[in-house]
Image 1 (tube, rainbow, N blue to C red):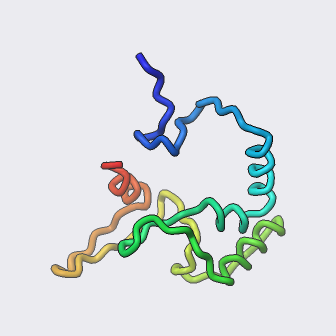
Image 2: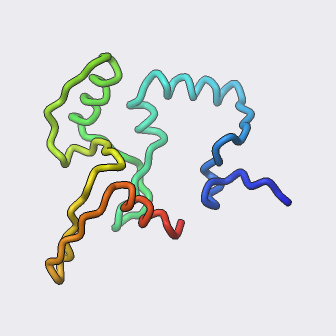
Image 3: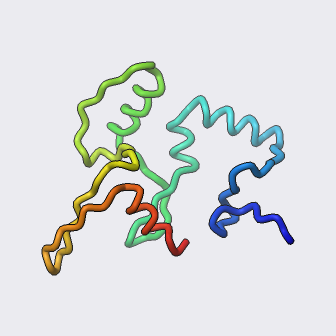
Amino acid sequence: MATVTAYNGNDNLKRCGVDIEYTQEQILELKKCSEDPIYFIDNYCQIVTLDKGIQPFKMWDFQKELIETIHNNRMVIGMLPRQSSKCHSESTVYAIRNKKTGEIHNVSAKEFHEICNKDL
């Protein structure tokens, strides 16, 4: 039986525990990414949009400033609105309203991601 190394059938994502041999250039790139989160995001992070599909993640200046602040300081407290593109925990609950019926469904972030990734 062949060993499966891809995660969820996506060859771009390796399963946990898969050994990878890196070239010297890749090691230097990993080091650069680990030291500069803005460089990493600008060069390796993508989002999916309804209009254009997979796109590079383009940060606003305030997002870059926030990432730099967090990266360069051990303790940071931020007063941030919900819409500022920050992470959430699995226990975060979203209230999703059906535009046609007005019905509201409460879905945890964990459930939401399971639903979204179900067919991938």
